Amino acid sequence: MQFAFCIRSPTEPFPFLFPVPMTTKTTAVKKASQADIHQSIYDAIVEHRMLPGTKLSEERVAELFEVSRTQVRGALQRLAVEQLVTLIPNRGAFVTTPSVEEARDVLDVRRTLEPATVGRLIARIRAGKAPGAVKQLRALVKREQQAHARGERRQAVRLSGDFHVLLAELSGSSILTRLIRELTPLTCLAILTFDTPTTTACPNDEHALLIDAIEAGDTDRAAQLMTDHLNHIEHALKLDTPPEREIDLADVLFG
Image 1 (cartoon, rainbow, N blue to C red):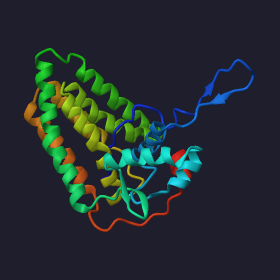
Image 2 (cartoon, helix red, strand yellow; image 1 turned 60 degrees about the vertical axis):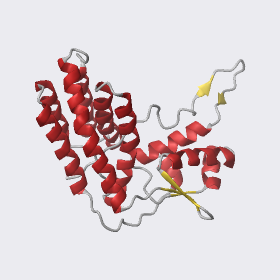
Image 3 (cartoon, rainbow, N blue to C red; image 1 turned 45 degrees about the vertical axis):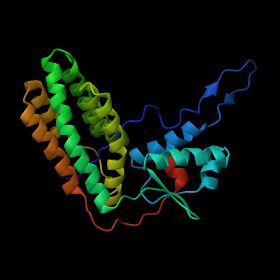
Image 4 (tube, rainbow, N blue to C red; image 1 turned 180 degrees about the vertical axis):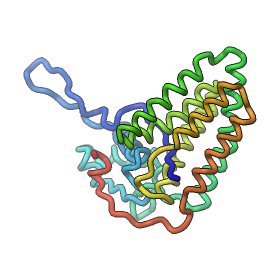
Protein backbone atom coordinates (compact mmCIF):
# COMPACT_ATOMS: atom_id res chain seq x y z
CA MET A 1 0.00 0.00 0.00
CA GLN A 2 1.41 3.38 -0.93
CA PHE A 3 0.94 6.71 0.75
CA ALA A 4 1.78 10.35 0.50
CA PHE A 5 1.18 12.92 3.15
CA CYS A 6 1.91 16.45 2.09
CA ILE A 7 0.87 19.94 2.86
CA ARG A 8 -0.85 22.40 0.59
CA SER A 9 1.04 25.58 -0.19
CA PRO A 10 -0.95 28.84 -0.13
CA THR A 11 -0.08 29.80 -3.71
CA GLU A 12 0.24 28.17 -7.08
CA PRO A 13 3.75 27.10 -8.15
CA PHE A 14 4.69 30.21 -10.14
CA PRO A 15 2.57 33.17 -9.01
CA PHE A 16 5.12 35.60 -10.40
CA LEU A 17 4.56 34.60 -14.01
CA PHE A 18 1.59 36.78 -14.92
CA PRO A 19 1.07 39.75 -17.25
CA VAL A 20 0.77 43.25 -15.81
CA PRO A 21 -1.37 45.77 -17.74
CA MET A 22 0.68 48.67 -19.12
CA THR A 23 -0.20 52.04 -20.59
CA THR A 24 1.44 50.94 -23.86
CA LYS A 25 0.81 47.84 -25.91
CA THR A 26 3.75 46.05 -24.31
CA THR A 27 3.32 43.67 -21.39
CA ALA A 28 5.67 43.49 -18.39
CA VAL A 29 6.36 40.38 -16.31
CA LYS A 30 6.94 40.64 -12.59
CA LYS A 31 10.38 39.49 -11.55
CA ALA A 32 10.68 36.51 -9.24
CA SER A 33 11.14 37.47 -5.60
CA GLN A 34 12.93 35.53 -2.88
CA ALA A 35 9.52 34.38 -1.66
CA ASP A 36 8.63 33.14 -5.16
CA ILE A 37 11.82 31.09 -5.36
CA HIS A 38 11.18 29.60 -1.92
CA GLN A 39 7.59 28.77 -2.85
CA SER A 40 8.53 27.13 -6.14
CA ILE A 41 11.13 24.86 -4.53
CA TYR A 42 8.75 24.10 -1.67
CA ASP A 43 5.97 23.17 -4.11
CA ALA A 44 8.33 20.97 -6.12
CA ILE A 45 9.16 19.04 -2.94
CA VAL A 46 5.63 18.57 -1.64
CA GLU A 47 4.28 17.64 -5.09
CA HIS A 48 6.90 14.88 -5.34
CA ARG A 49 8.71 16.51 -8.26
CA MET A 50 11.96 17.28 -6.45
CA LEU A 51 13.54 14.37 -4.65
CA PRO A 52 15.83 14.22 -1.60
CA GLY A 53 19.47 14.72 -2.48
CA THR A 54 18.77 17.05 -5.41
CA LYS A 55 21.57 19.63 -5.65
CA LEU A 56 20.27 23.19 -5.70
CA SER A 57 23.07 25.08 -7.37
CA GLU A 58 22.76 28.80 -6.63
CA GLU A 59 24.01 29.59 -10.10
CA ARG A 60 21.57 27.22 -11.83
CA VAL A 61 18.54 28.33 -9.79
CA ALA A 62 19.44 31.99 -10.36
CA GLU A 63 19.65 31.29 -14.10
CA LEU A 64 16.28 29.55 -14.16
CA PHE A 65 14.53 32.38 -12.31
CA GLU A 66 16.59 35.16 -13.91
CA VAL A 67 17.53 36.64 -10.54
CA SER A 68 20.69 37.26 -8.54
CA ARG A 69 22.41 34.54 -6.53
CA THR A 70 21.78 36.67 -3.43
CA GLN A 71 18.02 36.15 -3.80
CA VAL A 72 18.50 32.44 -4.31
CA ARG A 73 20.77 32.23 -1.26
CA GLY A 74 18.10 33.85 0.91
CA ALA A 75 15.44 31.39 -0.27
CA LEU A 76 17.73 28.42 0.36
CA GLN A 77 18.55 29.67 3.85
CA ARG A 78 14.85 29.88 4.67
CA LEU A 79 14.31 26.34 3.38
CA ALA A 80 17.26 25.21 5.51
CA VAL A 81 15.60 26.66 8.62
CA GLU A 82 12.51 24.63 7.69
CA GLN A 83 14.79 21.54 7.38
CA LEU A 84 13.76 21.03 3.77
CA VAL A 85 17.22 21.92 2.47
CA THR A 86 20.63 21.01 3.87
CA LEU A 87 23.49 23.48 3.41
CA ILE A 88 26.92 21.80 3.26
CA PRO A 89 30.02 24.04 3.44
CA ASN A 90 32.08 24.02 0.24
CA ARG A 91 29.53 21.76 -1.45
CA GLY A 92 26.30 23.73 -1.66
CA ALA A 93 22.60 23.20 -0.98
CA PHE A 94 20.76 19.91 -1.31
CA VAL A 95 17.17 18.85 -0.75
CA THR A 96 17.29 17.17 2.65
CA THR A 97 17.62 13.40 2.76
CA PRO A 98 16.29 12.30 6.16
CA SER A 99 17.87 9.39 7.96
CA VAL A 100 15.89 6.34 9.02
CA GLU A 101 15.80 7.72 12.58
CA GLU A 102 14.57 11.12 11.39
CA ALA A 103 11.84 9.56 9.23
CA ARG A 104 10.61 7.52 12.17
CA ASP A 105 10.84 10.51 14.48
CA VAL A 106 8.63 12.66 12.24
CA LEU A 107 5.91 10.02 12.17
CA ASP A 108 6.28 9.35 15.89
CA VAL A 109 5.68 13.04 16.64
CA ARG A 110 2.65 12.97 14.38
CA ARG A 111 1.29 9.97 16.28
CA THR A 112 1.49 12.11 19.41
CA LEU A 113 -0.18 15.16 17.91
CA GLU A 114 -2.83 14.01 15.45
CA PRO A 115 -4.92 11.66 17.62
CA ALA A 116 -5.17 14.56 20.07
CA THR A 117 -6.15 16.84 17.19
CA VAL A 118 -9.20 14.76 16.26
CA GLY A 119 -10.16 14.58 19.93
CA ARG A 120 -10.11 18.36 20.17
CA LEU A 121 -12.18 18.63 17.00
CA ILE A 122 -14.85 16.27 18.31
CA ALA A 123 -15.04 18.30 21.55
CA ARG A 124 -15.49 21.51 19.54
CA ILE A 125 -18.25 19.96 17.46
CA ARG A 126 -20.05 18.82 20.61
CA ALA A 127 -19.79 22.35 21.99
CA GLY A 128 -21.29 23.77 18.81
CA LYS A 129 -18.08 25.62 17.91
CA ALA A 130 -17.42 23.83 14.61
CA PRO A 131 -20.86 23.18 13.07
CA GLY A 132 -19.63 22.88 9.49
CA ALA A 133 -16.53 20.79 10.20
CA VAL A 134 -17.78 17.43 8.93
CA LYS A 135 -19.19 19.00 5.78
CA GLN A 136 -15.85 20.70 5.05
CA LEU A 137 -13.91 17.48 5.59
CA ARG A 138 -16.23 15.45 3.35
CA ALA A 139 -16.04 18.08 0.62
CA LEU A 140 -12.25 17.96 0.69
CA VAL A 141 -12.16 14.14 0.55
CA LYS A 142 -14.56 14.24 -2.39
CA ARG A 143 -12.16 16.54 -4.25
CA GLU A 144 -9.32 14.18 -3.39
CA GLN A 145 -11.27 11.22 -4.78
CA GLN A 146 -12.06 13.16 -7.95
CA ALA A 147 -8.38 14.01 -8.40
CA HIS A 148 -7.55 10.32 -8.10
CA ALA A 149 -10.21 9.45 -10.66
CA ARG A 150 -8.83 12.00 -13.12
CA GLY A 151 -5.29 10.73 -12.60
CA GLU A 152 -4.15 14.10 -11.23
CA ARG A 153 -1.47 12.82 -8.87
CA ARG A 154 -0.06 16.19 -7.79
CA GLN A 155 -3.50 17.52 -6.94
CA ALA A 156 -4.29 14.34 -5.01
CA VAL A 157 -1.05 14.69 -3.05
CA ARG A 158 -1.87 18.28 -2.13
CA LEU A 159 -5.43 17.44 -1.09
CA SER A 160 -4.17 14.52 0.96
CA GLY A 161 -2.05 16.94 2.95
CA ASP A 162 -4.85 19.50 3.04
CA PHE A 163 -7.02 16.96 4.87
CA HIS A 164 -4.63 16.69 7.80
CA VAL A 165 -4.00 20.42 7.95
CA LEU A 166 -7.75 21.10 7.87
CA LEU A 167 -8.26 18.75 10.81
CA ALA A 168 -5.78 20.84 12.80
CA GLU A 169 -7.38 24.10 11.71
CA LEU A 170 -10.85 22.89 12.66
CA SER A 171 -9.57 21.77 16.07
CA GLY A 172 -9.24 25.45 16.92
CA SER A 173 -5.57 25.23 17.93
CA SER A 174 -3.22 27.59 16.10
CA ILE A 175 -0.25 25.81 17.68
CA LEU A 176 -1.34 22.38 16.43
CA THR A 177 -2.01 23.85 13.00
CA ARG A 178 1.47 25.38 12.82
CA LEU A 179 3.11 22.13 13.93
CA ILE A 180 1.20 20.00 11.42
CA ARG A 181 2.06 22.47 8.65
CA GLU A 182 5.74 22.16 9.56
CA LEU A 183 5.72 18.37 9.90
CA THR A 184 3.86 17.45 6.73
CA PRO A 185 6.58 18.50 4.23
CA LEU A 186 9.11 16.65 6.40
CA THR A 187 6.89 13.60 6.06
CA CYS A 188 6.96 14.13 2.29
CA LEU A 189 10.75 13.95 2.36
CA ALA A 190 10.62 10.74 4.37
CA ILE A 191 8.22 9.18 1.87
CA LEU A 192 10.26 10.35 -1.11
CA THR A 193 13.45 9.01 0.44
CA PHE A 194 12.17 5.61 1.43
CA ASP A 195 9.49 4.90 -1.15
CA THR A 196 8.98 5.29 -4.90
CA PRO A 197 8.54 8.72 -6.56
CA THR A 198 5.22 7.54 -8.03
CA THR A 199 3.62 7.27 -4.58
CA THR A 200 0.10 8.69 -4.71
CA ALA A 201 -1.96 9.88 -1.74
CA CYS A 202 -3.41 8.68 1.53
CA PRO A 203 -6.07 6.00 0.92
CA ASN A 204 -9.44 7.69 0.60
CA ASP A 205 -11.19 5.04 2.64
CA GLU A 206 -9.05 5.81 5.70
CA HIS A 207 -9.90 9.50 5.48
CA ALA A 208 -13.59 8.69 5.02
CA LEU A 209 -13.61 6.27 7.99
CA LEU A 210 -11.99 8.93 10.14
CA ILE A 211 -14.68 11.45 9.20
CA ASP A 212 -17.36 8.90 10.08
CA ALA A 213 -15.87 8.50 13.57
CA ILE A 214 -15.65 12.27 14.01
CA GLU A 215 -19.28 12.70 12.93
CA ALA A 216 -20.34 9.97 15.37
CA GLY A 217 -18.49 11.72 18.18
CA ASP A 218 -16.46 8.58 18.87
CA THR A 219 -13.23 10.05 20.24
CA ASP A 220 -11.53 6.75 21.00
CA ARG A 221 -12.23 5.30 17.56
CA ALA A 222 -11.17 8.48 15.78
CA ALA A 223 -7.90 8.58 17.71
CA GLN A 224 -7.23 4.90 16.96
CA LEU A 225 -8.00 5.34 13.27
CA MET A 226 -5.56 8.24 13.07
CA THR A 227 -2.87 6.20 14.84
CA ASP A 228 -3.47 3.27 12.50
CA HIS A 229 -3.32 5.58 9.51
CA LEU A 230 0.09 6.93 10.54
CA ASN A 231 1.30 3.41 11.29
CA HIS A 232 0.28 2.30 7.80
CA ILE A 233 2.32 5.13 6.30
CA GLU A 234 5.42 4.17 8.28
CA HIS A 235 5.06 0.45 7.55
CA ALA A 236 4.79 1.18 3.82
CA LEU A 237 8.21 2.84 3.81
CA LYS A 238 11.33 0.93 2.86
CA LEU A 239 13.53 2.10 5.68
CA ASP A 240 16.80 1.04 4.13
CA THR A 241 19.28 2.63 1.71
CA PRO A 242 17.43 5.18 -0.49
CA PRO A 243 17.71 4.66 -4.26
CA GLU A 244 19.85 6.95 -6.42
CA ARG A 245 17.88 8.99 -8.96
CA GLU A 246 18.76 11.32 -11.82
CA ILE A 247 17.24 14.80 -11.42
CA ASP A 248 16.72 17.56 -13.98
CA LEU A 249 16.34 20.77 -11.98
CA ALA A 250 14.52 22.69 -14.72
CA ASP A 251 11.98 19.88 -15.14
CA VAL A 252 11.12 19.63 -11.46
CA LEU A 253 10.89 23.40 -10.91
CA PHE A 254 8.92 24.24 -14.03
CA GLY A 255 7.37 20.85 -14.86
